[in-house]
Image 1 (cartoon, helix red, strand yellow):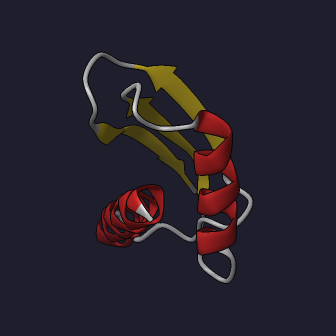
Image 2 (cartoon, helix red, strand yellow; image 1 turned 30 degrees about the vertical axis):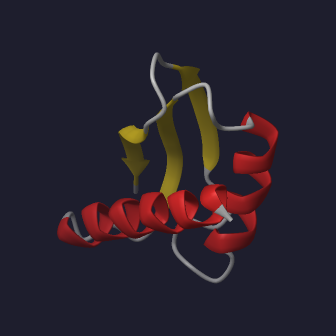
Length: 78
């Protein structure tokens, strides 16, 4: 459940940033992820949560980071 809530927050932030830039599509999302998260679970959950949004199909790049946080490093948009 912890990861699902984090994914929802991440996707909300990504979509808001994309909307502010008048993006038609999010092509990539780069995350910095703390050790408390299972990277493969995050990939799957983000893919599911992004269905039907402009972030559907975006490439996900994950970088390990110290601590327990998850944050959006960058997004690529069209």
